Image (tube, rainbow, N blue to C red; front, side, top):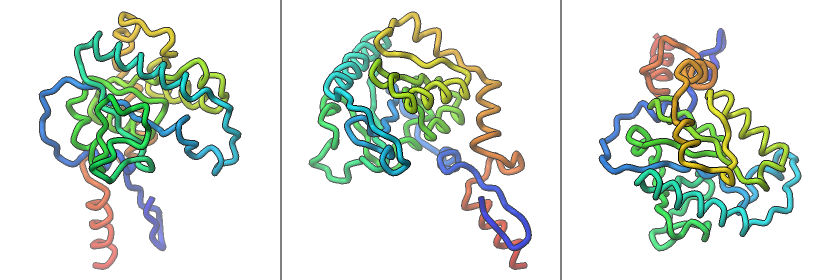
Length: 224
């Protein structure tokens, strides 16, 4: 939100604005996993006063690795992991700060989602504001978690609520079956439109404008 002395000026969600930037087409078949860092990293748990459960980190990630391999085999695609911005490696010699992901494709580029989202087969996430890219490009979003993570009331609520907002269901990867996930790839476009209006682009007049254009126009009008 951009404030003036007289009234509020609304801008887009940051990810929504970035998704409007033109991208190159990519013909490869891939699925994007939006990693939030946990439980290998503590994330924002301590900062917002939440208690982090004593997870069996090794068990959780072995479940994810098995799940990713099944996705790649069942859908003839490649999983590309997009780390949370806080945990992206900026060093060429370091592929990922999370050693469990070393055998998968990891894209640490600052604009990874901007360049890859429009041609993604679908998205996987535990619940992320970067879901904006799936909504804008009309791609299926599957909210996933493990048995251990669903025992955490806060994490579970985040995943369940995020899935509901997008008009889909959450998936416990322990119960993964190809036919189940295929059904979840159907998009609820009414929910996507509602999600966009509620969380991404509050002012319908500026749907095709990037944030810097909205702000520049406001400054020009305000100073004239």
